[in-house]
Image (cartoon, rainbow, N blue to C red; front, side, top):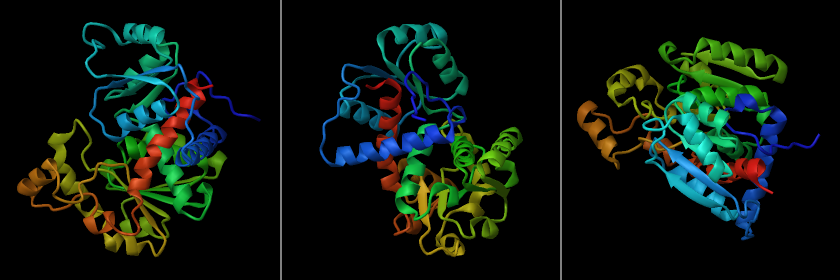
Amino acid sequence: MPVNLKGRSFITLKDFSPEEIRHLLDKAIDLKKKKRSGIKGDLMEGKNVVLLFEKTSTRTRCAFEVAAFDEGANVTFLSNSQMGKKESIADTAKVLGRYYDGIEFRGFKQETVDALAQNAGVPVWNGLTDLYHPTQILADFMTAMEHVDKPLDKMKFVFIGDARNNMGNSLMIGAAKMGMHFVAVAPKELFPAGELVSEMRLLAEKTGAVIELTEDIKEGVKDADVLYTDVWVSMGEEALFEERIRLLGAYQVNMDMVKATGNPDVVFMHCLPSFHDLNTIVGREIKEKFGLDEMEVTDEVFTSKYSVVFDEAENRMHTIKAVMTETIGK
């Protein structure tokens, strides 16, 4: 059956079938070819979108803006609204829904983006919350499709680190949907919520996916097709650096871990930004306070032949473009 996503919000991958997710990935691949060929798009000509940002951003903002411009849409970036201060989220959503054809939100609470979607009357896209990051997962799976010589449902996808954050949650959901072998390698204190794990394992029974959680690094990464990590401390958790370094120090992605996969073609992925060197203010502060030159991944791995992080970053734009054009485009 043909897939029609017109008018749909994109809040979490839980809301989408495997066929719909595959459709978005295929659409993104087509749009990437179109852009590489220099073909000017018009799929969102005359449309207006607004980007609501509580959290700072490089990839998410730029990907949404360029994707919209490429297909003829107009964009408003809004980070200083009265939403939640002098005006309720529901009222703000109703106002913005009168002005715009689509609304993106990047912030802290999942309840905020849920409320926007319930009240706006137009598609709302989740650019990141503390709970989920669904647009990133589309880019990750697209990148895996480009670099791993296997279909998604034959891949072993391993996430190492803070597995109860938005990336750990969303990768597990995406993997369960697409029938993948997903392994979260983390200390038990940072395993995903048990309720979500149970929900995804129930889904996995239908899709053929395998969902595993383990503290055993060697066993967890064995035969991996993809090694994936994220920062140890998410935005808003900066006071937890000392605790996370204690919990996750042994889970740094380094060349020993890459070799432990036993797969010479394994790829390394990261949603970025990454603390792999001392070329950032925060990286130097961590060095001064804790004596670390690198955190979740070594510079050796980050800059190695295994790393596809910048292809992955580019694919944020193509997959976001797919989401927008399929939900509000011609």
